Image 1 (cartoon, rainbow, N blue to C red):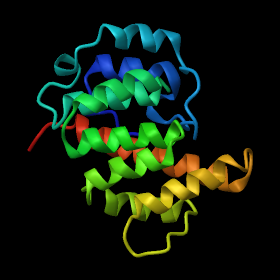
Image 2: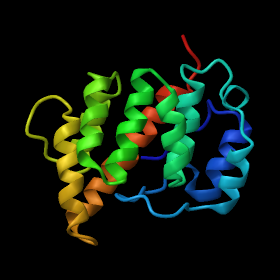
Image 3: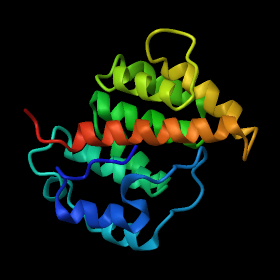
Image 4: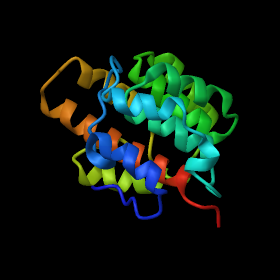
Length: 179
């Protein structure tokens, strides 16, 4: 699923264009940034300028850092964001660390996020087989942990595709203008 970037500021789309325009398969384990040029641009970025009127400008910035596999920077922004979105980005960062227990802690703080229903529907379409009728972020943590043990396999592919969808949905949720 390609990310709809039509609602984003040109500066944000230019940053995303540095690595597949929001369609990058994020790694299950953060290691190194995917684009040095993106890091340079993000280091001087102002969330309010990148995401004017957005639901969560800081959430959008945390999402950009995470998209480019900048663990420390994404963690720093998410940790300062005391909202469900901040907790959600924080949980994803720790899932990719990987620190599954810490990820679970932050998902407990998220609660039932509004992106969960669409994430469940999309995840099923991508081949993920949930054990329940609602999105379970804790089961997905376990799924990603299992996928990391099978690099290059079908489980890893599904985990990365679902993780990309999760990133796209949460990023769009944060970056869209409040209604």
